[in-house]
Length: 497
Image 1 (cartoon, rainbow, N blue to C red):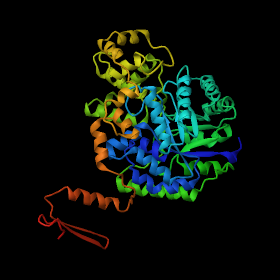
Image 2 (cartoon, rainbow, N blue to C red):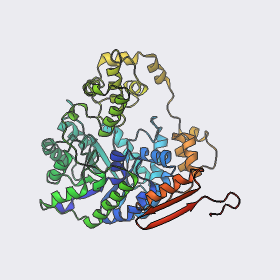
Image 3 (spheres, one colour):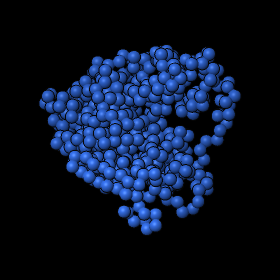
Image 4 (cartoon, rainbow, N blue to C red):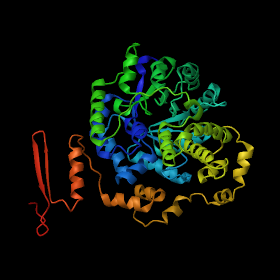
């Protein structure tokens, strides 16, 4: 690899938004406003969406996610839009029928997605390959197979190198990427692992995607090109750092100091960051800040956002002082369940079980459905054998027998019978995997708004709130030489006074 070939994938709109703002921070108009600037920077691709983000678009913003894709593609003609998929589900946590997944891939391509990143939470190479072939059949331009990084007794360099060789040998896979959701890749480990992955990938480009959760990723990124990495995943500074990816400004500065050319338009990148800084201020959203090193992460490996949720839940139960016990229990449960990778959905499976074990009179006194589904094999085969005592105890639960007897998702022709004729494929797919009332509200809301101005946003929110208050008949807004007087509409004429 020559340094001049280094590429960048921007994660601001998808993973940055998800890591720092819970995926709910950005609406379609906010994305469209900055899209031409992002298109100008020179990114190889924009890490843009997942089925979870599509669900958030409907549930929280009443916006059509298919319309979002089409509009975004129209605003970014030079840059690929990328979609991350596990291949095992679409929006719903129910394991999807292969026909439904094939339809989702076809519709994503039809509506503007050109590039897919495919991961399996169990690092099952056969599952990744199967889904990549289905995506290729749907017409995707570029497909990236993922190695999901984790630390455990079985996940050594050869484990990842062997998986990389398997993925690289598949014709449907164009690139390989190391996905480090916990931000656990140290510089020492990178120096041994990345060259082996470069060799295993053959001539196919190698990408690195890591998080700044304990401050390691910026150090790893600074050396990654010299270790064989062809592309780095970064975010605009306001949506970088924290539990997100490294800020592109910092990464480029470090690489330029080593004589590495990136080819990015950093003036355009600076304007992107300026926009998101203003947006964060207008919407009351936090910007990413560098994180402190915390060695405990190598034990529990919980995603940063999940730790915040766990701490809040324990505080509400007046049990926050037991968080260190929960961390220890997470490690124990993870080992008993066969060392699943601490990424969605398994981080939730392990973390929830650990909290319940700590708070209950004895361990595994109560077992949630998702843990049972994991144990009975609904999520695939764990990387290592489960503790036989724990497995047998859960398998003997009456609820385990009920869940094992549940029918899988039906094929498409049966699903279609549940809904009236005349639906577009896009609306049918949403209705097949989401609550009807949420899709109804999205349809009733009509086309999404396409313009956004962070300067005007606070005033718009104020006016919207005032419009919901029938008890307010008059308002006066004055600031920095600006004066606006509002009166309620006349009930008789509907005209403003």
